[in-house]
Length: 169
Ligand code: NI
Image 1: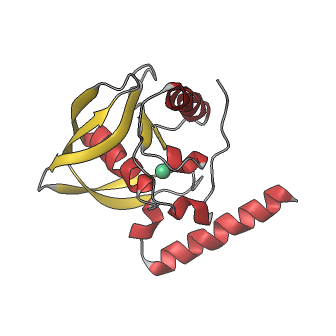
Image 2: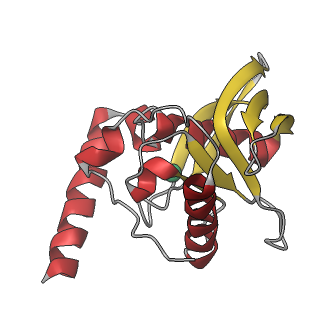
């Protein structure tokens, strides 16, 4: 198991659209366990492969209080979403320190493969539903700040670039 470096907004690699996983093999299983370690270490509730510069449709999530219920979604597809939506405050490991409101569906049903390659269907609501929608956006090359006003987005971009310049000094 290895900790993977997480790409930081506005890294253009975060705009990459991920490809479907062909086979859930040892390589993908290693990626999944590395992503889980990385997510827990960073104290995140979700991580998409895009964020660790692997452009395949893999997501790991854990929204449990105890941090002991990892959920692995490979090739996830939303098969149903509620009409009802809600404004939720979101953050992202790729945009550290920034939290802002994004409108998401209250509930989604998702079909995906798990880390063994078995297909499963998840009925998610509340935080888990928000997290799944947020992580699935990453696989499409979309970071949550894209939903904010251009003014806010530019302010965040400037702040992130300044932060990264300071860190690389
Ligand atoms: Ni994110």
